[in-house]
Length: 83
Image (tube, rainbow, N blue to C red):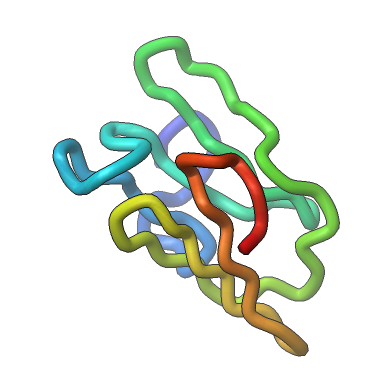
C-alpha cells in the first residue's frame, strides 16, 4: 500500500523514470477520477473526471490507457488532455 492505494491494483500504474512523461509518479482511477500521485510531495493531482466503470489502467510513454466497461480512454500526459 502506498498513500492509501494498492500499487498492484489494475486501476493503478507506475510511471517509469525515463519512459517519457510522469516518471516516478503513480496514476490511478478512484471514484471515477483519474489521479496522479507524486510520492515526493505526497499529493494527488486530478487529471480527469468522469472516468466511468474503469477496469484497468496502463501507461506507455506519455499516454495513459484506461480500459472502461463501455469505452477506452487515452489521456496524453504531455498535453494533459484526452486524445
